[in-house]
Length: 182
Image (cartoon, rainbow, N blue to C red; front, side, top):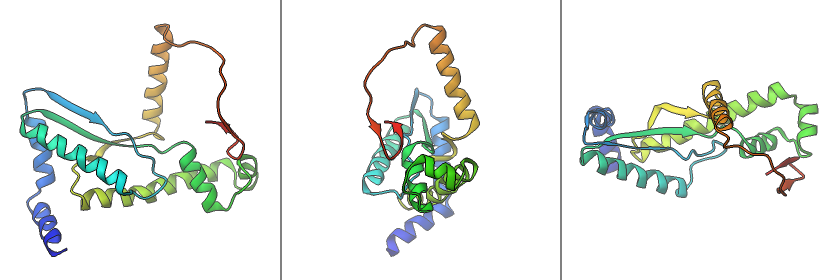
């Protein structure tokens, strides 16, 4: 633990993370980037998440040393069933969406979801720092933010205009508890 603390302190005092980011930006033989998965902020980072993040970080450092401009932008999935189910558990709602909307209300539910993702984001960011993963948290995308959602609508509009979307029927899985298709 002492060695780990010493290395972390050295990196912090010598601003290694920002120097690495500057090196990534000044590299010039080509571009190399990856957009984060993104992980869902409904729980703590586990060993599988940590392994994946460390491997990606090592690969980006290697590509930076080769002279590539490397974009290692973070991203966070803040919407969908994993977040909603976790909030339902924390609020003590057991009968699905109808009970949730009746007992809690839509506005409070949305606010509770935002609180949950920010709480878990703090843990994820702390773990990234402990693992020395140099992911760019400042420019990360968040799927609940208006600019992200607007961009998704723009992509759908373009796909529609290009005739890439179609209409059809198919059987889909349905969750009775969540009262939605999966």
